[in-house]
Image (cartoon, rainbow, N blue to C red):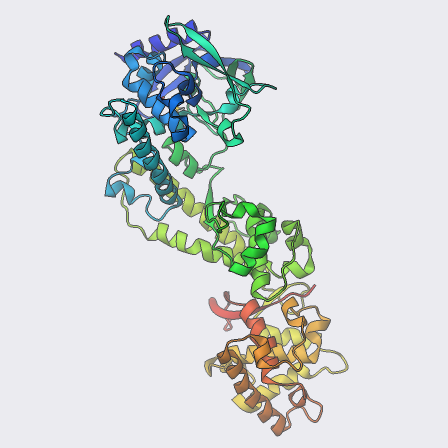
Length: 630
Ligand SMILES: C[S@@+](CC[C@H](N)C(=O)[O-])C[C@H]1O[C@@H](n2cnc3c(N)ncnc32)[C@H](O)[C@@H]1O
């Protein structure tokens, strides 16, 4: 039947059952967007454009009361409710000549149309476009579930005597696609203040009849299902469309809040959906989608930490008590204010305000756990991290961990050699991919901007990252006035052993990391670190004096390296650097102290960072260490 005839029959059927489509709206069709609503003349703001009675809907509820296809009611417990919806739509399609929904089924995209949801990416060339992306991962997970629905559903149909030959996997995929791309929530037909849900069936006389279903014993998750709402689902999506959906008893209406000019498309708004959701469910993506984001799946924390987390976050675990990657996947929004080009905001820590709080919380627990700090429930993790002095020191580590999780994703996206998209599937995937790249880049840029904002001069107050020379300058500036020379004495000691006062020479000689460990241990012994509040929590308890290597629970190589540094200290003491009471002669020096203080400080608070070059030109990767300070 020509398109016009299909639409005319659909609208006639719609009207016959009490639906209403505004007289200034027609259902038009084009190759890009398929069927859509179009204004034939000006439509004023606040106009109700479409009203439809619940009696037109198609969902698993209809399947449960259908007298012609009783398999669903009889075998209800062999199906998931989602699967009943898919099978019921297939049954209606296969038997559409006698279906109540015939005009609607005729107007739906036919099963042999080209669909661009990832479930239809069968060719290797198409699949390459989603390789390594979240969408592929989600699609594979969903497909496994759908295949299981299909196999078990076909078995049930067959054992009920139904000829299953027409019920192909492709028709099942079509039914799934119709549901995911046109679905409304069961909220649209939920009863108000009643345990009875209304559904409809065709009786023996061929008339539509209301049936009340007592759903009081239905589990809550089975009350949240998808419904098809003929004609209400012919509007395409725009993020900019301001529309209201009204759920009144027995009917569902859509109202446009803004005027629409003649000949313009009248858009619906499916909600603030990121491109991965749009691609998965609807098969299209929006360039520069403001709701785009990137998914991050957290690695399972160590088992003993999982044990502490289980009572406070049971939702992170499967019903059998295992850590669930699916339930601990979070979405990082595209931080629009931080693009790689403009990443110099005045408040760099503001990126943390838009990161998902469960992510911040979990990383905080992991960092504390790595540092051997006993578990303590933190009720408001975001506030704690941003406002508590002790906790703010974790922010650069959280930034680093997130950047490290995002980098492989970015590299996979950027390294793929795909050429130009050749079909609709590839075009939509290309939009999705580029949205992923920009969202990841913007998050990385924002987090790096924050980390770099901590690279400040020694005279400035507050938390900072320091290179070895930065540490020595900061130490010098904050040395106790009664003992002003400890930083100098330290440098003189190194000079006595290495033969130079220049950090650049120490680097060339391969001593930089060790001297940083030693310098941090020295500022701890000197007391300046504690006075300035630089000392991390994990060093304070217990204090290192008198600890044995075994009690430190450190790798033997770390302790052996610290033993090597003790040689240097002994040489300085013997050479008399700094005189009788100098830090080199401090009786508390022991390999365990160096390992516990400097070693741990570098291990937990050190990282490689691009910093301005020591020759004043360009940038170079340097080991920096975090001093909290206030
Ligand atoms: C609810 S239906 C809308 C009616 C549909 N165009 C049709 O032909 O029946 C949703 C489908 O319309 C298409 N669509 C909706 N909004 C779109 C948009 N902004 N860009 C491209 N396609 C869109 C997609 O194919 C989507 O799966």
